[in-house]
Length: 590
Image (cartoon, rainbow, N blue to C red; front, side, top):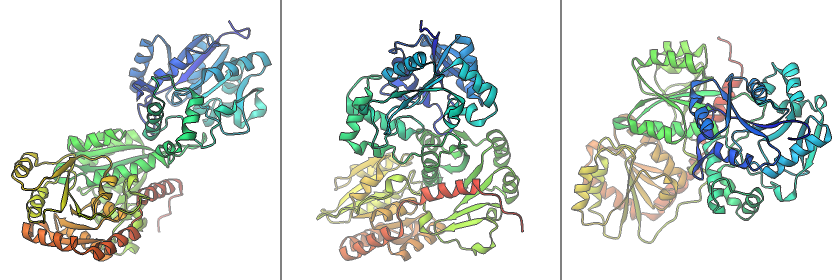
């Protein structure tokens, strides 16, 4: 045993992360994140035991069971007090020295852990940290004595910083603890500012790419090798460079998003809300939850993006009353066309900020913040909340921001896509129309995740004289869109994505609202509206497509107009504005 007593690693871990629920058991290189920590801690010479400190919440039952199955002791304590869980873990394990380990740092280095513990034991200090004149790759570890932990409990037991981040309190009050310093080796420098902890799905994707590039088994990524890899391939950093690291003292805001999608509704509202949710989580450090109506396909799209959700049940307003009471969001974002009343919004406004997206209904009188990417049909001066309107507030997915101009081709490439579900079967009409185009036209048909007419389309394509390229549920739509010279689409969010990339488009409109919005895009110069699809035939569509394919100068002007109007950064602006709304004092009633 160490001359200063028993050394115990205490891993703080829970399933209820605000930004990435369930992350500690999310797979990295084929093994749960927490498994990586256990494997690396078991290589340390100086540790006598490992304890997982989680919460008493039912959501952490699975985590506790998994850790116990790994042969690790588990201690459970208050969900809102990490410091109390450390005290329970130290007492249960009879620790004299506690090594604090955060559950989201899968590349902790056994060599540095041993060096820190040894420095603590030989120096008579109470706390140990790495020291370097440069940023380092090390994250997620620091040892301290049981006496230092007791001082934290006695002097800072009610301090939010200590309760949530434990030893971070020592760094803000260095005079209250004797610290030993260990020099960090230059080979562990982090000059490029790589993020090696997992706060969001983007962080996990980055570490997956690191493991793939190193070609090593789970748990075998050497920290110095990671540093060399990133120096040689700095492009990997783009995978999570946008993620904001929250300050230890910062409070996590909670945002509830209410939207519908799938089937006859299409998936456009879900897609744009996911774009905003991603920016809230990644750039603004918010916890985001969805309140969803619609199909199972829409729900799966939200889950695949890593967001928790609740499916609407019963009468909408009453259901939201209960959900808001349970989740206590700081803001409620509504992107719905349902019958929710201004009175319901006024009720919720007493507890959280109300944010509306593209809502022209009477609900606009009961909101704190409103976004209208296309100019609203009413006078914004009548609103009690702040109104943000114009192309700069279009919520597009991050992949559409900052892309180079689309390519042009000798043989024209035509993209055809009618949205996530294509409830009206416009893909069938488009295929019929494009049969009339010259043979050198290269059409690419993209079907959405919830496409409703697969059998009819298959029969139609089987009799086609043209070799159609068909893709479905494409993840990287930006790259695919950039390969097109022209697009034929159902009007919706896709129109704005194409404009941001500089791809001119023709719009088929499902209803009068879509036709009115499409006319705004046509007036801006980056699209051509063919009007209501129900009033069109295949010949008229074919003629319009052929005319625009033949007019290269016009397509070039349309491409320039789209890129000038839409930069793809609207979702990030909306997220930042929502956080600003949460944090600013509410305006007094007039």
